Amino acid sequence: MSADIFEYAPAPESRAIVKLNSEYGLFINGKWVPPQSKKKFFSINPATEEVLARVSQGNQADVDKAVKAARAAYNKVWSKTKPKERAKYLFRIARLLQERAREFAVLESLDNGKPIRETRDVDVPLSAAHFFYHAGWADKLEYAGYGDNPKPYGVVAQIIPWNFPLLMLAWKVAPALATGNTVVLKPAETTPLTALLFAEICQQAELPAGVVNVVTGDGATGAALVNHGDIDKVAFTGSTEVGKLIASSIADRGIPATLELGGKGANIVFDDAPIDEAVEGIINGIFFNQGHVCCAGSRLLLQESIVDDFLTKLQSRMAKIRVGDPLDKNTDLGAINSAAQLSKIKELSESGTKEGANVWSAPCSLPNKGFWYPPTIFTGVTQAHRIAREEIFGPVLSVLTFRTPQEAMEKANNTPYGLSAGIWTEKGSKILWAAQQLKAGVIWANTFNKFDPASPFGGYKESGWGREGGRHGLAAYIKGAK
Ligand code: NAP
Ligand code: MG
Image 1 (cartoon, rainbow, N blue to C red):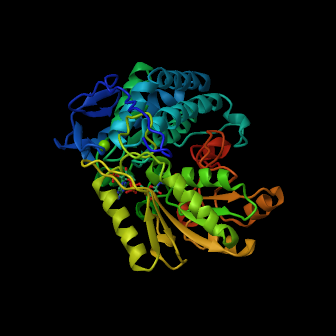
Image 2 (image 1 turned 90 degrees about the horizontal axis):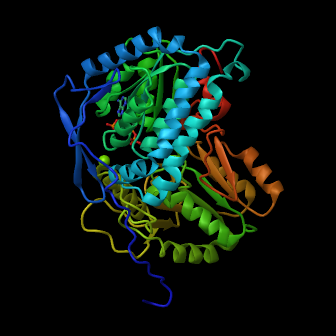
Image 3 (image 1 turned 120 degrees about the vertical axis):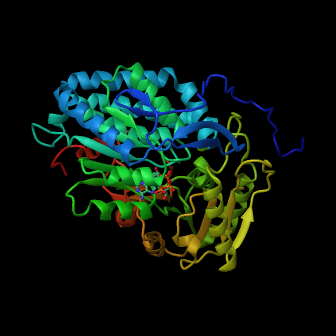
């Protein structure tokens, strides 16, 4: 053991708690049904490339069946269920998520590649918190400021990405049910397993059949759902590219949508910031969840006078990030979610080098199997570089510099996105001044990546439409509310 590296013994979480089926059907009208497409696809563990399960590919006929089930459940049961009864189901689901937290945490790590430390401490507890929070709203909607008789839309189509599979499900399903809507959910192709386990929770909670339906599949399944003629609202989280497709496909149908899309968040460190704390915050901002975070602080803006000192400390901290087995409790950075995402990260990183930025990756040994990328920073980045403009969605940080606070604001806002930003300074007045200038939906000061179900989340410009979470997020599921 060298003097400056403290070694830990491996501390793997057991996967025995997860009982995987070899095959899964679709969850429609409270039952598991085979897909009418008769097609299946594999979900793999991106850390090992091991096949975890065969999952059903939903086609148009399957989507139609699910929408019909959601419509019947809405008309016959859910729209007639008293708000305080709806709340009971949400509380039950929240409690069951807590009871089965370890199972969900292990399964999410297996299917997604993210470290167990994060699924255990972030994804699963926050998912339960979303159901608890919205359970509290279900019978108090008339006091939410959306009129004295708030009405749901009806059947909601929900499409979620692979980076926070269970948490994005919770962000979508909890407010929809609390406000009295029924749901057809399409999880991401590479991470369907926690949504399927959630379907089991719905059964265990004795949620009336058809209130939540889960149709697995790929982008075509998502498109079939969005284009279905009998949905009343769309809620989508994913890329700006697909968000635009969805916006155009519903444009002439009078269907409202919430779109939570991409980001290229600026994390701004002023010369009076507490440097050691800021280094930790920058690390968390870009390496949490392998950088597969829409609100990641993927652009570091450093005031020129502190650049050398800051980068020395940042690189020394990056060298201590533990990359490897997602089920090891000591792991900080897990696997990249898919081969496709890995090649996107590589392509954008190569463009950074070609366009003249300087690359540095933390020295670490990467496993032979699976999809991996080391913690990486680019310095000498200009605003014109692709790595300063495009979302990399991986553990790659682009470092830019500034001389004056005003220049920092201009550079931070020089992006087609506007989802998040971070401010690091010891002066409260500077925080308030900067927060007013920044065009971002969420702004953290002297911290980063803090989430709470009571706090609305969403973006400006190409980062999307609408808000999720908090009182604001309820509006998306109440007819006529803004
Ligand atoms: P994506 O390709 O847009 O996929 C998101 C979901 O949409 C997946 O379930 C996907 O299915 C489905 N889909 C694909 N094509 C579709 C179509 N034509 N019609 C309907 N649905 C379709 O995004 P991703 O690459 O999985 O996720 C990463 C992106 O999500 C990033 O840009 C990130 O910033 C964004 N994101 C935003 C937030 C936020 O809250 N703002 C949160 C998380 C992620 P498949 O899985 O089969 O492709
Ligand atoms: Mg998977």
